[in-house]
Image (cartoon, rainbow, N blue to C red; front, top):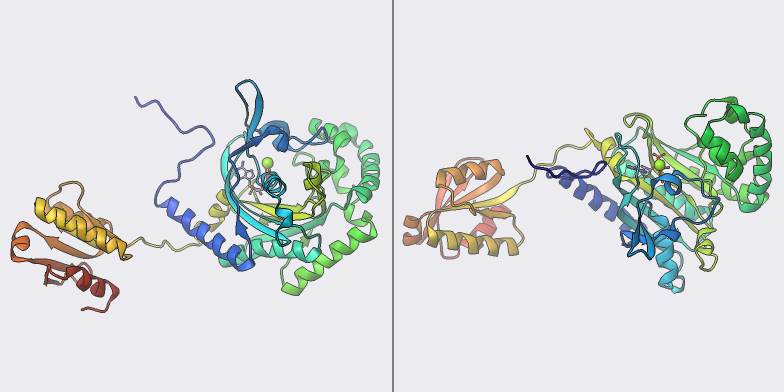
Length: 424
Ligand code: ATP
Ligand code: MG
């Protein structure tokens, strides 16, 4: 019995599904190009310290989901669980602060998190992410949000809503944390174990606990939005004005939180209304003005999002008409001499931009015709030993089933005209 399996929580992406991925990636690249965002590719693993940034970190990622390994008993590395810190690390390390600002980047990357696999939740998954580094304005937040919004629009995904919130700045958050902790203390014995921990380190994270959702502890909690300082309040109001101006609809949701200190102001999510079960959040993002400094760089503003591509593809299911892959031409041949001619003609036509296949299985002519049908070839050329000797070949239109003879001399140019639809 064969003994190897793909690791739990990983998936092979096979044709024709891989073609959906390519179409999605092309769409993403097209949109990012129009918005002026360039692609960045960072390593698959990083020094562990890049992701573990101190004791205040109560995110699931850092606390339980990282794949960490020690290199030759010396240095600790971690497979990237998210895309933002590597991008900010690269920005600092490569001196990108001297580029024209803001630096607008996007990535399509694998991420690794050790979690229980479920629908829309894997151990190796893919994120499309965007980071705009160097601008602290609300219009920059709105631009980043509008990239995600336009992707959903172009994919005809409309059962999705944008939820926004502000997590303030370290100053107004400090005051708010005191109020919130005061409030949560009253409910301490009703909170789940995780939340009793979070309460001490990072009370805002209690608000997005799935276990405690709907309890008075959360329903009656004071809202960050009601306790923003003037500057943060005006940033938030300004964001809403830009979204309104562009007609991008949103709901305000004070449970959208990013617990870490380096997150500031805008936090947002795109949440699917149905189709994804518990894994409804397709895209999460926000502003992280404190991150660059925390990583040892100069203080630099930044805003971005990460979008789960598996979840996005689940939403796209049934939305997308199957685009059938077509082969322009199949060259059927019999005998060695004809086979070599077929091989070289296929090579030439592929160089000229056509999708062409020829026999690599030494099949009979009949079996080759069957295969041509299977791969949905539009045209077939048949070259046997007889034809080779006469210097001609047979062209068959696979749709009308009509056949005619072509001279082998100049057959490449004749075929180019025919495939392009200029010939008969
Ligand atoms: P969740 O609440 O679903 O665990 P998260 O808060 O951990 O999400 P982020 O860190 O904000 O998610 O990551 C951004 C996006 O990446 C998510 O909105 C989701 O679409 C996707 N994502 C996160 N974890 C996974 C995973 N294990 N498998 C597939 N997609 C994921
Ligand atoms: Mg998670």
